Image 1 (cartoon, helix red, strand yellow):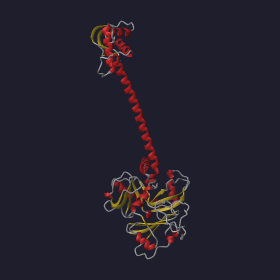
Image 2 (cartoon, rainbow, N blue to C red):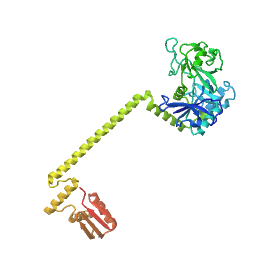
Image 3 (tube, rainbow, N blue to C red):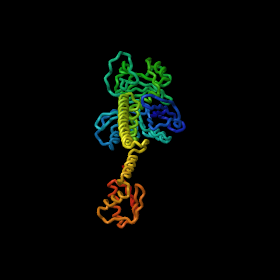
Image 4 (tube, rainbow, N blue to C red):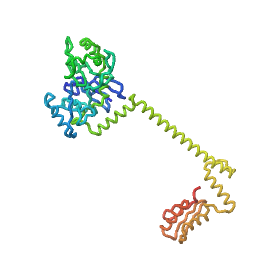
Length: 429
């Protein structure tokens, strides 16, 4: 998976001057490589996630009406018309993962034309976007855990009370904060001598004293951590941009909805790729992987054991046939094909005792007479070599001879008829 974000989302996207930060991961759990480069130098990957900076989106908590999917976009425009600045038709909307009509969900809104421009620019360069994710999103409500005062939660905790992030977007440094009430972004201009009021750090409705609580998480780009600590007089956890991109790529968010939505086939392909990647590498699937490997190993061992038993049984039977041949005919010292050699030895004994063998001419003629079933079928041309007779010039129709041939074959005789001549051999042993 390749996760990219524009270094300056609001800049005019062009292939020549556009810079993107990127991070690549093979298992979705750790960053394998990362960097910042022009669009043409981006690594290639079939699964590309476009991450939007916090200030590219506005967040709205609304109760969705119970309407069908075809009317949902129009319903969102009506519900958000009084909540956004500008023309609601110029905005792109996306629902939170699992959001359904009839429920209260978060809706992300952003500039439709700019978002389309970035998607089109990536696709034009041969890097199709498979998913669009936010870099910061409203947090889910959860009880505050019991912990010592002053201990902040780690970056890996998905639901802190409030989360603050200092980062650069273009030429501007921003402090973006997320809580259960939404996401807010405050610019930090150069030369700021005192931090902005704490009430401005979070969306409207938060208690201004709440951000100073014990369980807030304060994070910053490593290059901006010292500046942020001096400005706010508190410790900021340094988080590399690549780690933040990886966190955004791990979520279930996909803002490619409605007029920017992917085809159902593409969504299924994305879901399958993500599930397969998680199954191969994610720690949560380690027990399942070991179980599957053990099951396959047991099956292979069982098949090998069964094959070994079958081979042993077959070898024992073959040895028994060879032993029978050499015990019955001690003069046979070299056994190549025991059944054929035994048939030959039996034929020699029959000839020596004056008995007819199955391949003698008399036996062949008797078989033809028995297969004729009383019909007047006779051949006027007979050619015999030991073990095989050829009969031609039949005083019968071709259908009658073919019917006789089929009767001989059902009896085990090797009979061939080419329309003129019937070749007959004794049954195989």
